[in-house]
Image (cartoon, rainbow, N blue to C red; front, side):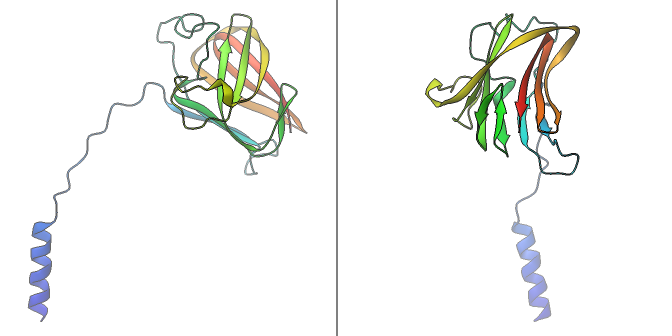
Length: 179
């Protein structure tokens, strides 16, 4: 019986598909990034989280050219930017309920309109549906002395107040928030 079992295992292994190494595609030129808002400190439950891809300038003029003024932009690259809000919050003085949203912007040289949209799992701004807008806030552009190669987002705050910073090239926008 023992010989029979060994024979069956050997026959089974000879018919098993061969495992081959799969090729890894080139690394994404706009890597995925994450901004987490933990106003109560490290290791605590977050108030919000943003998942986005960080495009880079690579010698190109972006805002106003590659990312045209006056048109809806996905606030990053690749898949549309997503924000998960874990507490009722206000952004720019407007209330936003707990939930998951996509974030878009309509940039201009002097201000950005930031749009919170209920249509999830979209690619870029191609699937943007204005009828799914939950709210929008307009924030002024602050010119920075620093030139940022890659687009980035970061949260800051404590004691019930904070901000969401978005920055690229020499442009910064800061959305005040409360929680």
